[in-house]
Length: 364
Image (tube, rainbow, N blue to C red; front, side, top):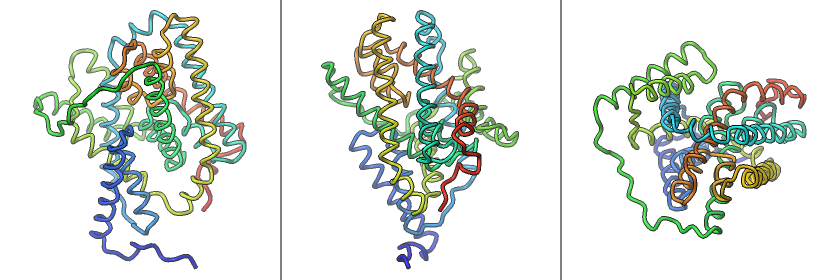
């Protein structure tokens, strides 16, 4: 008989305390290591540790729905009109690069699903080169195993950021000497903040009630993009609010793990890692083609084609002498296409891999 989990019979307050402490430790360590999305990753890590040690808690469903709405508005904030201008100059090359990455990630997902490394459409969502937060949330809406999708997405994000940072150093770009301390509680303009909250809460609630696929994420995003680009909304998301949203999403994902799923993910790690590295290598080849055909400088081309997450790559690009609008435009265009094509590609790949919807969750 396996030993009983350490926290299995603790009181609910004790379990919440253990979950919070484990998450805090992970967040602090990840922040010290300068990992991207440290709060989100830390919340997931802390929740996994708590769950496999017997914590049986559930976050309120409404907190997860509201957090999706906030992430939708966060994505909308980056979709400025200047992106279209940046894409217009080399639209054919940009479109070809974006489609190549999407096709490559789908083929690699098919290989993982066909070889039964990962179940069903989970492999496709896990490798989808969009914003990691959005891909995880959309994967759940379309029936994939959100635990394994999160495992793949954030593994890829960490690897991409580490390699992108290394490439920047190789090209002689020094890191910023000092980064201003985060102002967690900035002064807020009341009307823009209230308007943003209204879009977040009303859009997420309506998307959920109407049962739109990933509606709690996508409906607020679409509304926020429309209002922002017509001058009717200044999207205002203070750091403390985003922190709460990241924790809510991270706990919601991490608390679903158990020992069987964790062992399953670790066994798949070598082959998943190989697939992620293959995708990154292909994006490097596409960067070379952009340099040769599109008159783009090497560092700009590499950052523009890196397979997500778009927000992390944009942060690196903002601190280096590259064509930032081009990098953000290509990353955003790919993200939008992945959101549009992702559900169809996931079903198609799962079908040809011989895995139906029932295969989307690993057997325990």
